[in-house]
Every structure is written in structure tokens, then in C-alpha cells.
Length: 218
Image (tube, one colour):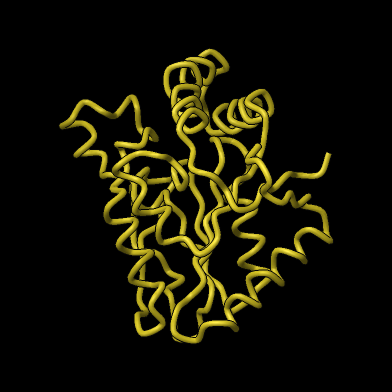
């Protein structure tokens, strides 16, 4: 856990606290949008939390996930990276950071890509950043990854939050997700060992400090 960073339990009171923090930050600067980044290992519940926070803020917030910046499968195949899809180099970190920076400016509005689980490719999203949007909620494994390609993303974030979860619990959730979409238990275990576990180690071994640590209720 990040030393001296405040810890918020994600119960009702904790979620209200986070929503108030973001609402107050949005009111404090009328020229820049608040960009809050929720980082954490795969399977920690980042997207669930990000969607809940964006929903709590209503029309003032939009959820802009990192997964929309996966590199296309054709590029992954050409580079021989398909088996490591989800590793940091299989995302376009520069485009992701540039998109966050563009939408941090209140003058800019428009659409952004999202990841389609059916096509397994990035596609245009249907919830654009509008003139009413004051908070961008984004999430992903690599938002605090201390690497040349990713520091630009961390630098855009108004708030850097880390969602804490043990590897054991995260692995169990990933196994459940992978078997629910048709993988056998053996295939899910191999995917975790040969990809997800490697990415988790990268994230945990080279992480920039978070300003706040978040924990799901016990």
C-alpha cells in the first residue's frame, strides 16, 4: 500500500466521499475537467468502480476506459503480440494520454473509443464528452505504471487512485470471467499464468505513488 496515502473503504459512506471529492474538484476549476484515474491489477474491479462513480455524478461525468485503446488485432498479429494481449505494449498509450489531455480542456468535446467484447476490438463509443461533462473517470492496469510509455498518462490525471486487491482474489475473479465466456478451466489457468500474472507483476513492481488507496468492503 502507498505510504501515507489515505484509505477509502468502498462502502456507502466511502462512495459518497469519493463522489463529493470529485464534485468539489469540478467546481473549483471551470476551465479544466477533472480526470480521475483508477489503477489496479487485472481483476480488482476497476471498471465496476469507475462506472459506479460516473453514475453517481450523473451527466457531469463520463466513463472513458483504457481498454478502448487496445491496439487492433491485425497489428497485434503482425507484431506477434496476440498471446500477450493486455500487456502494456499492446495498448496505444500515447493516443490514450493524448485523448485524456484533450478532454481535460473544457473547450473540447467529442467521442472516444471503447472496447467491444463481442468483436474483441476497439470501436467508437456512444457516450461522448459533452459541454456538460466536468469529470472524466478512467481506469486501467497501467495508469500508474512507471514506464516511459505510460508516465504521460499518469501526468494527465487530476487524481491518482489505486484499487487494492490481493492477487489471489483477483485471479479468482479472472478465472470466473474467463470460464463464463467459454474458456475451459485449463485454458483460463493457462491464460492467467502466461499473461495476466505477468502483467500483474509488471504493475506491482513498477508503480507510481497513488494519492488515495481504495478497498472493497470485507
